[in-house]
Amino acid sequence: AGVIAVLQRFLQNLHQMLIDNKNAKTPDEVIEKYFALVMNYLEPLEEAYRDRSIFPIREDGSIFMSLGAYRDHLLGETLRQAFKTAAYPDKLFVGAVVQNCFGIDVQCRTGVEVKGKDKHGHPITEISDRGPDVNGIEQFCTDPDFAKYCERGQIRALYVNETESNGPTTARYFASKLWGGETYFLQADAHLRFAKEWDRLYAEEVQLAKKYPKAVLSAYPPGFSEEDPPYHGGSQGTRLCTCVFSDSNVEHRILRINTGNMCREEEE
Image (cartoon, rainbow, N blue to C red; front, side, top):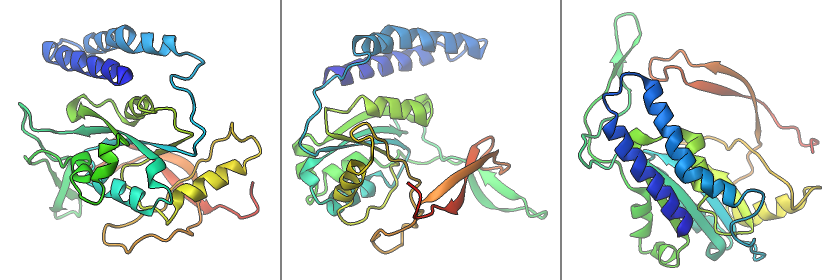
């Protein structure tokens, strides 16, 4: 609770700073004040626990799942799937950073959407007004089948205004601070499907690593569509290779990492 309070104070002061500087003459003015807040609120936390754990590491096989969700309508379903398919759902804990438009003193809007194509075949894009984003944590915690996990404190959430989000790395940094000493740390997307007993399989696999417990498993999950049947696992992993800036009108200046060949079974 103390760590969350520090993060909330940082976010509250960030919110006020951005309001006070909405008419700043240059971006540098805002950036300088942003880093001043970092040094005032976040650096002392880092310094206090540098090279040591905030909490004692539990030896009970528990898993902490770190999620950074940006206006993600699949967050609630991702949580349902994670707990529903887990072999030991009572040992699963989630730290979610929810970056949403909450509709408080602001008109929520869509991102850039493709509405059609012009006569040259180029996409016609548009940004429209819309209602507040779906709160995936609320969806999960009000579901009678899963509410018990919220009541037991297995879901920890930090809320951020989407206009004040600073990208996935900052969200993942915040989410990492919601760790409470669980045995395993899993960083994942907020839009995933899970194989049956994924938690047991994950723990067994990482324990096979030569450097366990100082081991990291990294994988690129297979894609899916919302209408797909339940995922049963067994997909081969893919490699990540080459990065290019997208030339799409919808993904302006987004760096895309391409997938490559399937991983070979004989690789360690």
